[in-house]
Length: 191
Image: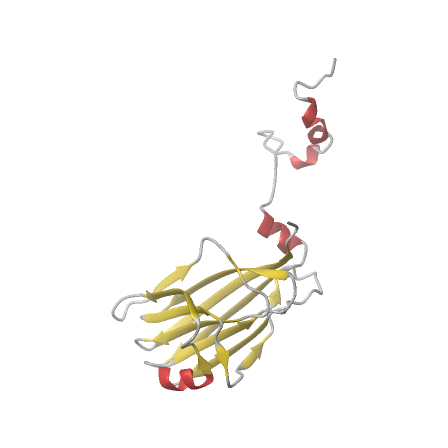
């Protein structure tokens, strides 16, 4: 007779370091956190001070591979902004390339996503270099009200399509800072 009430859990007993010593609870990290440890998670984190009616476009181009980005977007603003997150934007003028940072600072892995940022003085000039007219709007909203600031963030991730251009756009309804935080991990689907 086994000394274990549940023999299928014998393997757990062999890894006592995975348990909290005071409660006996099994210590785990969630999968996105595991991807950070594995060096496959990245961040774009920037702040811009925009005048009224200025527009910022952050364009994300996914590679044509089966290594897909599991993407989260968050930002906060000093004043009111209207914002959009688009799929399949068309670029006519490239912005300033931004190198995503690996969240595991001991990893030499680099992201497969190309990210560039461009600011414009108006929505009309933004549309001249980043055409969103045929794009799919995945998210749209306002941050803040009147001249008040606000924030927005996703609780669930988007798994971005391969070989696709995405665009995050924000227009300053009132002058002020916008701080953006885009995080993702890159993973090849097992199923």
